[in-house]
Length: 373
Image (cartoon, rainbow, N blue to C red; front, side):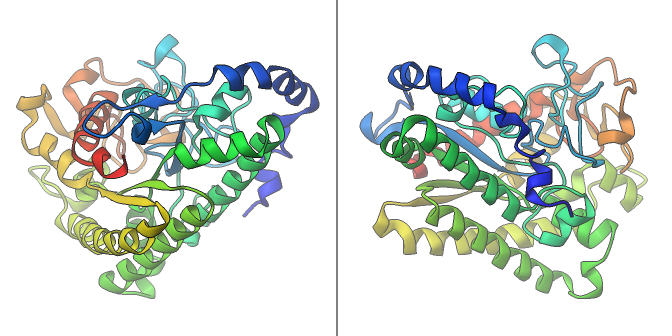
């Protein structure tokens, strides 16, 4: 795997002219900065969200892999066909992804940019970025298979971010942004699908319950480290019903295109165990002012799949861009998509459409944000 310096492109995003521009703008932007506020039962002071930070995989990667040599990238059509301006930014969907939707719905900003993007401004740093990389997971082997940044590398990027923000606005301002922010981590799907089922490297070492235990331990260690680095409010998002991804339905061979049961069982097992551990961790860390909550994406997405007409969907088992493991990422570069994406829950063989994400994110906010406020 490439070194972190190589992955950062030698810190090319922070060349001297860019840094000087940020320093010149720092005082004015910091003075004008106003955190988002969520309206509800708690006081406004308790509900300030200064920024959104996103760790994870391709579900929430807005383009951190664009300059990497990896198959886990999406900065080409048909990706982004419904993104503002029709631009393929590296987001693995037809439009916005959950990080963007969370940032917008929580009142922070319209888009959550990639930390490794080429055109970050100070306002981006003050209001949050995404460190998520397509192909990543809590198991470090998962990222090696995809030649992408690991969950540990993403924490290193967060350290780098903090140092850069400190240099631009000072220790006090940096500390306030970090402490008032909300953090999300969205990983585990690649570990289960790519590293256990599709390329069964871990299956030769573990049975499914044992591998899930290993993943849960890795995920909790990640979350503890993130909390130790200053993240006080963390939303831990579980894994979706992986057996319902079009590519996994195809691999399962169901003639009627039903969700593949073993992969869904693995998803439920991981979610059950990690939710229990998150509850324990939240209790342990609450005395220090931390709030760590589990967000259930499994049943929220499954609800769309089982009740498509209620949400305006017509196709639940096919991807708009295809339904195999090769109907995603670089393998569909410049291919044509279906003409009626609004009818589909899934955009490609793995990833939902913006419409599906939008509904699920609304559910996640309604059900869970109160635990982080």
